[in-house]
Image 1 (cartoon, one colour):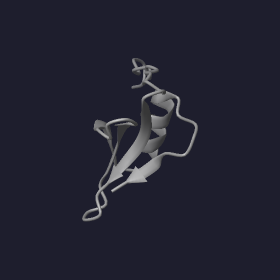
Image 2: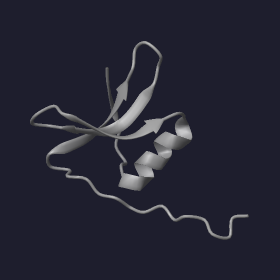
Image 3: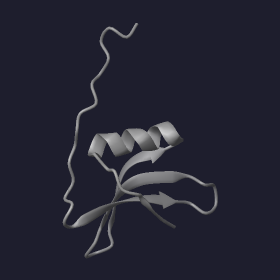
Amino acid sequence: MGLFKKKMEKKTYDKENKKPVLKCSICNGEQVAGFKDIHTGKFEEVMLIRGAADLEAFRSQYGIMEEIEKIY
């Protein structure tokens, strides 16, 4: 029906210490969006990316305009 659609809530992240990345599997092509700590290199998983719509939802949810780096 669409009468009670859930609104996308804007979330924030620590832009000074973390950067958005896509962690990609070389075996099956699975992609996980999240944030990598600049100082420790630790990866924090946020959501599974199944397609372009999921990636766009991740970008709009966190207000990311720049290119997202891929790590393997």
